[in-house]
Image (cartoon, rainbow, N blue to C red; front, side, top):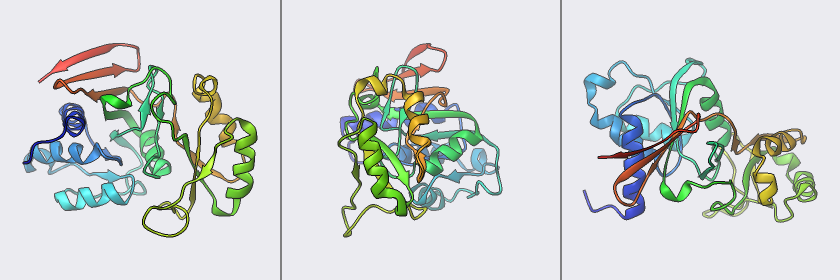
Length: 243
């Protein structure tokens, strides 16, 4: 294996440490391939009775390519553990998610799990949301409603809310569910009360799902540059792990 960059190595550390203790819903994002790598390393005997449920196209392909048993949330509505990445995590384990436009499926699997675990590199750890993730809250919206929703969100305190545009095609990003995504940056005082902000946005007509995951994560594992892993627990405990 080629030498990983410091950031990629940090993602790998966080993913490997989390998987040493947990399993089975597989999320999306740049850290998740390392989760799958770690599960694969545990061997066929450990994995033979496990069923893996993806949050979207990326994680489905990772599961299939690894040769794992693929499940569906329609079949398995109760999940033991969901492991997913995040764009940012605050001191209370509230998360911004949806940079990859999979926040609806990710939240469905997070809510269906007994335990929701976040894995990320050290850059995603903040005291308050919006500190490092400046792109705003990712909001999945019905395509028919995006224009009035942009206006409403701008009046609500996100004057720079924008429709997310695709990089390799003309036009907007289209989610796995056929919807659009609005990125809405709010002020620090709004991010300090993410649960209230989530409810305000959810009440708007045309909102499909909001990329604020509040009070859901039981723990967050952060891979650090020095090879250690920092763990934040929902009860306020912190732990430093070294390999």
